[in-house]
Every structure is written in C-alpha cells, then in structure tokens.
Amino acid sequence: MALSTSRTVVTETGLSTNSTYNVGGVLAGVSNLHTIGYDVVDSNTGTGVTVRSTGNASFTGVITAATFSGSFTGDGQNLTGLPAGLGTALSNTQTDALNKIYFTNRVLSISTTTTVDPPATASAAYTQYTDIAISNGSDLIIKDGDELVPDVLGLSTSALPVTNLEPNIGGRLRVSQITNTNANGAPNFPNGLTVTGIVTASTLNTSTNQIVVGSAVTANITGIDVTGVVTATSYRGDGSQLTGIDASTLKNGSDIKVQANASGAVVTGILTTTQFKPGEIIETLTGVCDGRTINVQSGSYTLQNVTEKFQETDNYQDITGSILAYTPPSGTKTLVYGFKYKWSAFANSGISFMKMFVDSTEIVPARTQVAGGHETSNHSAFFVDMRFVFDLSVGTEDAANGKFIGSNWTSNKTFKIQTRRYSSTYTSEIHGNDYWRTESLTGGTSATGTDEYVKPILYIQAIA
Image (cartoon, rainbow, N blue to C red; front, side, top):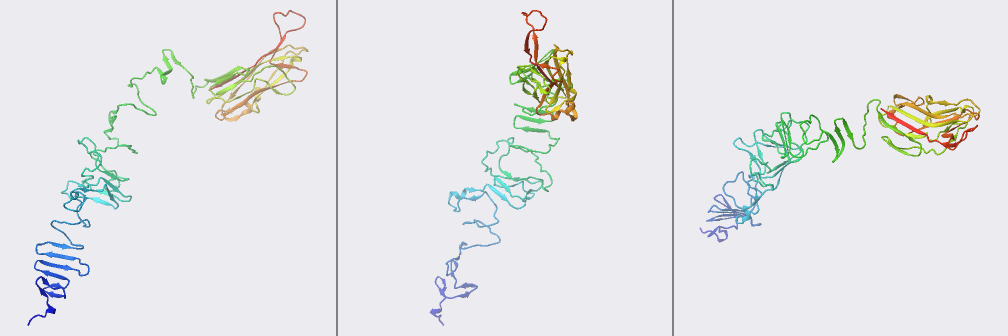
C-alpha cells in the first residue's frame, strides 16, 4: 500500500523534521540526516552540531572531553591544562601576523606553597616570567638537585650577559626570605652570589677565601687591597708600613700645629688636654685688680677695678678687689686662692681681722689677724698676702674646712675676703701708701708726704 502524503518522512534531501522518529538509531525531528552528513540543531536557538562525511565537524557551544589530539583551530583561550608554550598570541586569527607574536605577563605570582620538582630526565625547570613574586605565608621550594631558571626567554629589559664572567641579570625572585628546603638553614649558592647594594650580616664565615667589592676592594687571607681612598672612624694596629705620612708633624689641613724636633715638639696655637699628671698645673689666673679680663682654660674672668682706699670699721665688710666668681677646670684636685693687698695702721697697732668666704660659707681655717706696734701714733704698713689651699679630691664635702667634691663644682662659686678692726681705738686702712716721700721733701720732726692708693693682686691656680 502507498504511504500517506501527510505522513511522508523520506524526501530527496533526507528525513523530514515534521515529526520525530527513530530511524536506525538516529533520532529525527530535531535533526536532519543527509547523504553528506547530519545536523543536530535546536529549532529554537538555531545552535548545534554539523557533521560532514569529509570528517569536518562544526560545533556551536562548549566541547568538553577528557583529552584532545591532533591539530586545533579556533578560540582556545578557555582550554585548561595546556602547557605554557612561548606565551599568549596577540591575535587568535591564524592568518593574522599577530597570531605569531606572543606576550607573557611580567610577574608570576605564587600564593600557595609550591614545590618545583621536574623529572630526572629534565636538565632544569624554567619559566618565561621575568619576576616571581611569592606572597607572605607561602613558600617556593626547589628540590635538592633541581634548578629553576626564570626569564628563560631573556625578556628582561636589562641586557643579557655577553660572557660567563659577567653577572646573570635575567629574571629575578621577589621574596622576603630565602631558606634551605627544610626552612631551617641557609641555602647554598655553589657558583657564588653577586650583590648590588648593601649586605648586612650578623656573622661572616671565617673560612671565606675572598670578598670582592666592585673593582676597588679585595679582601682575602693575606689582607685587604684597596684602590682609592680609605675612610674610617678609627684605625688600629701597626702603621709602620704606611707611606706618605709625615710622622714629625700634626696638621690642621695644611697648617702645621705640632712640629717635632730633636729636643722636643713645637706647638703653634692653644694646647688643650683633658688628662694631667698628678700635681701638674692646669691653669693659673692672676692679675692686678684694675678691671682687666683674663682668659684661661675654664673661661673668661674680669677682675674688679680698685680705684680708692678705704677705712676699716667695727663691722665686717668686703675688701674691694677680692671678689671673683670662678669654676675650676675639669680634673682639678687642688685649688689655690690668694689675695695680696696693702694694709696700714694709724693708731694703737691697728688690730685687724680677716675672713675668707666661698659663696656664703666662711672657710674657718683661713682666718687671719694682723697688727702693728702698739703706739699712739703707729706707722706700721705692709702687704697682707692672704691665701688658702682647697682640697677638691675628697669624696665627702666639708665646705667650712675648704673641702669640695671637684666633680660637683661645675658652676661658679664666689670667692671674697671680709675685714674689720678690733675697735675704733685701733684704726687702720687698706689699699693705701701713706706719707709717700718725693725727692722735693726734706727732713723734719714729723712725717709728711703724699697719700696714694695701691691696687691689690688676685691669684687662683688649679692643680691636677
């Protein structure tokens, strides 16, 4: 019987898609079966698979397989598990020249602990990345006996070495720490280590044969060879082999400050020292009390200017010229203070008393009393040289007895001398010459002459 036209399923070009049939295991209705192949097409989206008897197949969508073999065309950017190769082509079009030009990102980031262990048949492991950046908390481990060569294509912007004597400046490893495989010791650098910059080390292996710093410094077991200038904060050891040094002079720039000769040394300028032999004089401050300024090691001091004589009274008063604020230089163990002035009696021996002070403390052992002959009219006159020796070497201070801790005397203390007469019956004066006789004067029954004032002298000496 003839087939119904409404149920025809066989045509010149293949099976009709009007209905769905199972023809010899091929599902028709969503596909077209032809003499040259078949199409599996989604009638809604128009996407699917075209297979031809020539062996070609066209897929719209994703192909997932365990493995792929043979040549491959089209966009493979989402394929996984592929070897790195030279890099990524700049174009996916086979006929485009950019399809044969590749790029590789500069930095290979490692964020998990990774072990490089190529098979024993390999000479080394390598990567075309120029930088390897290892994140904090991660490790890059190179197994013992293996090598990892970064920037194998020589893509670094730095020039590649011309000879094996030049440093390898290809890729670089960016990490905060490098250790051995077990992370419990130092790694080995069998061919050496080239460093540009500063190397900081807590210890240096004493078996190191040679250290080379550029072309200027070489250190080995025989010593250190330096080409150029050596600058150091201090030098030690035997300098007998040094040349170009004038051992007979000390200079400040080109100025000779100390010149040695057969009898000693000549010093030009001020000689200052911080250490002294016991008993050595550190400084002497002395001068007439005429307002002059004296410069010594401990500082600059201005003496009082005495311009008149004065009468003693029944109360203690400061002797003009005796007052000076002073700080001894460091290292002083003994300090001498002296004050020399003219004293004259007028009546009944002119009994006078003197006291010495340091600030407000009287130095009791320094007390002095002077007097002339006991007569109604007394012409006694002489210099009083009042001085005292202070001990600055003690451990316990006793100011009233002239004992001070030298290391504590770091600022000015004021020296002075006070005087008074015994009473108004015993009169005297200070800083004067009475009845000064000139050549024009002639003898007589009573003394005549000119009254003058005499400037006193102050004296301080610091002794080690």
